[in-house]
Image (cartoon, rainbow, N blue to C red; front, side, top):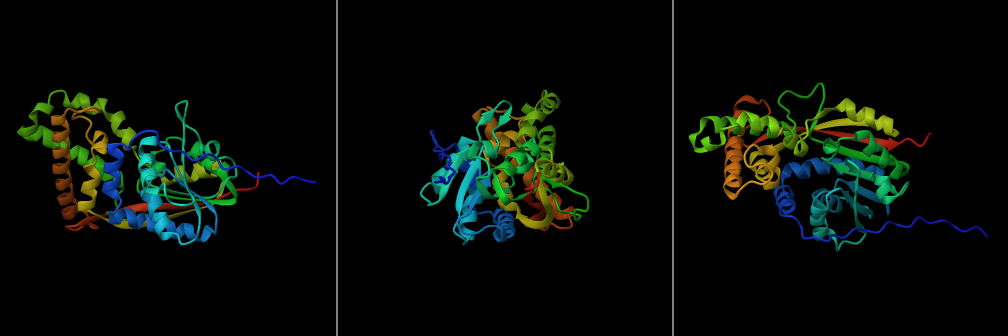
Amino acid sequence: MAMSMTTQQPKSWKPDRPVSRGATAFHTAVIDASWNHNCLDELISIAKPNIHENNIVVDFGAGTGTSSIRILQKMKTKIKLWLVDNSPAWLGKAYEYLKSYPNVDFFILKKKGNGYATLSETVGKEAVNSVISANTFHLIPNLKEAFKGIAEALKRNGTLIFNSGNITREGRQKGALMLDSTVYRVHDIAVEIIRKNSRFSKYRKGLNERIKAQIAQRKFIFPYPRPMQDYLKALKQAGFKYIEPYYKCFKLKYDDWLKFLRVRRLQAGILPEVGGKEPSPEEEKDRDTLITMAAHKLFKELETLNPLADDKSYQCEWVYFVATKNNIS
């Protein structure tokens, strides 16, 4: 008599350390921001037709859980939701919020050489029905490897749906920005303030050298955006078909974006020239003041010069992708 084979679910991760202050600050800054809800709701609406009762859905790059919380709120279909991330400190925040939810599990992409384990190495091959990922892939250096690991983890006809507000493309509407382009501009304005405002004159010595030395730190937290074609090429190389890019603009309220810019963990990447990775209390305070001043100057600049901005908000474009696993070898 033939025995039926069943795939054993991998063991769900649990944190072994307190939630980091940086994760908590980021979570607080974005959880109720309208731009976050809008870009996630669009992602979820695109994913819904591909998700069915009792499907296993992965939130890839779940971070502090803001995307998973929204998925559970908006997805009326009963699903098993697996949160996957490479940061125990950040996923610990998601665990804090969602550990009591039924059918929710957590998985860490473990360090592997200079990178991280793939999704298939973490949860198994042909283990999941769909993968959803919000604002994550622009942070991943090796797109092909990440996509290949996702393709291997997907079941037959499984889908990958993801977005990013940091992808360049031809034909972008005039005035529509990328998320990180405003971060780079805040950095440049803050440097101008240091050079001109006597209050911050103590940071002028060696400033040019620090700017050059801190490029790697800035790119680590806010990588330079890649063109849409890089994503399409990597998806095809990894074994996906029916790749459909889609674009949509959403308003970002200045008040909401300032909360994001004032997350101390992120400020180490916005303006590392003041204080670096381990600022003194004074440097941390000055860095926050400089970034806040620069942000207000940016908002006024956008209001005056950007055709899609007004006195309360500017507009950012998100690029969305829908890709199906290619089951033909």
